[in-house]
Structures are given as structure tokens and as C-alpha cells.
Length: 129
Length: 139
Image (tube, rainbow over all chains, first blue to last red; front, side, top):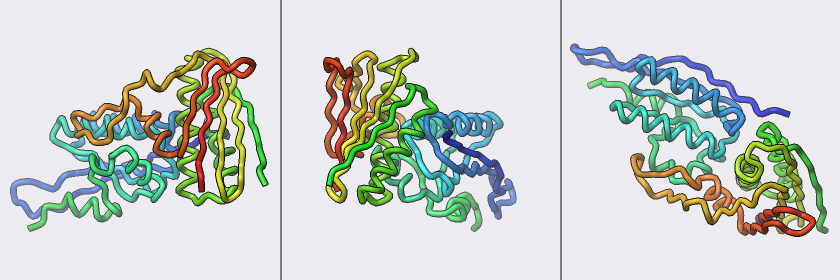
């Protein structure tokens, strides 16, 4: 019996009506499985890669995450700190009730921007007048 | 009627999911809902991570998990190891009320265990046993 976790990367081109700039191109990491000490390095690598590639904002879509332990929480916090240092952010979307419960226990629901759905997260990145 | 189950595994990170799944099944059989089952599983996961990382510190050892079930009343989880005593009082308290810049992740696992379970009791160097952590969750 082994814990498994998968991370799929796609992206979202945020809408913009500005003539000066296009909308942000935002990586979306869709995470599925069990996020614990034995699997967390998979998400850590994906987050580091997207941030090193210059992403300002990253969305972590978590509807498929069935479980999260302190190892997963530490990585999310570390990634958000790195992104914020560069004026960016790590947004979380689509948390299951059990994952949200764990984030609640440690106060992360206040620290993070959390969206009910991926579409909700995308909409906040659009710059449409 | 009370019932008990036990499982003994090597103290290795990839065994944690086995222990967590074992206790989750016992919690489900005792009548806990999915949110509470997740909390019990989390407490066992964090406790076992501490045993592996701190009590054994990478050395070989075993973890014995005992589960005592009183269906529709309570579940007691006992974790036994023969590593160095890991006293959580020496770990700084985690405070969930910091900002992104100030929050410290030290003690995060212990904090989760205390939040997830109703009672937690550490006993160290118990003769003939070793270190014993007893955690109880009531329905």
C-alpha cells in the first residue's frame, strides 16, 4: 500500500481589456491524491518549477486531494511566501470539506485566498472593465 | 461491546499510509463520520511522522498501533515505539493567528494532533513497553 499523488499542469490566459498589456498567463496545478510526507515532494517540485519559470500567480486546484497532512501545509505556505516576495500569489481552489477542515485547524483559511471553484479563481485574475 | 485491533509495522515513512488506513477503518466501524475519520487519520499520521523522524531519527525500529473501539462512544489509539522519548513540550507551540510573514510552522503536527483528538497522553520509557502515546476521540 503506497500513497499516490499526481500533479497535472495546465494554464489560464487571464482576460484583459487593457490596451497596454495582455492578461496574466497563470499556471494551474491540478493535484489529485493523498498529500502527505511520502508524496509532498511531487507537489513541491511542480510549485518550484512554475515559480522558477517566472509565474507570478499559480492556482492549485485541489478538488482531487483526498487528504492533507502538515507536510502538505508546509509546502503550500512556503510556496505562497515565495510568490508573495515577488509580488505574486498562490491561490487555492476547490477544497474538499476534509481538506478545508485541516486548513481551518491551522488558520490557513485566513492566510490563503481560497476559491470555491477553479472558475471563481480564474475570474479574480481577469482584468475586464 | 469494546473491541481491539493492532498492527505492527517498520518505522518507515511509506508505512504511514498503512497505519492511517488501518485506523480509518476502525474509526468508520466505530460510527465516526468522514470528517472525524479524517481527523483521527491525521493525528495518527502526524504522531507516526514524529516517531520516525524524532524518536527513531532515521534508525530502524517498529511502531505498534493498537486501536480500542467502543462503537458509537469512543475510539482510543495507542502508538508504541522504542525510540528516544519525543517530548512535545520541547516543541514550540504553533499559533494559527500569525500573518503570512510571521507564522512559524514549528509545532504544526502537534497542533493538528491536539486539534484532531479529544485527549492526548504521552508516557516515556514505560518498563516493558517503551514510549506510549494514547489518543482518544469521543463520538
